[in-house]
Length: 45
Image (cartoon, rainbow, N blue to C red; front, top):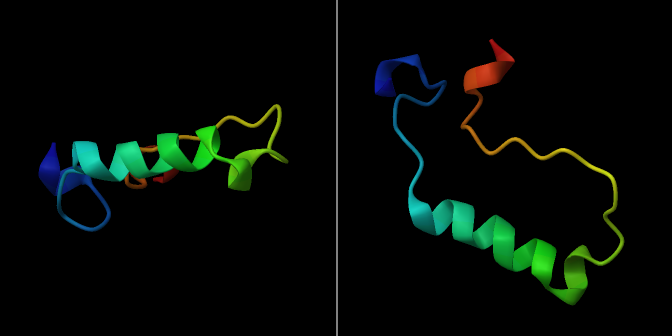
């Protein structure tokens, strides 16, 4: 699975945590109705 990632590595829980923290913060308050895929580009190819 790691070799299929665009940058050759798996994401970390901390990287996902950063997105969750952003969306839960005031900085993410203007986002709505978006589907965010946090997969390191796996579904882009």
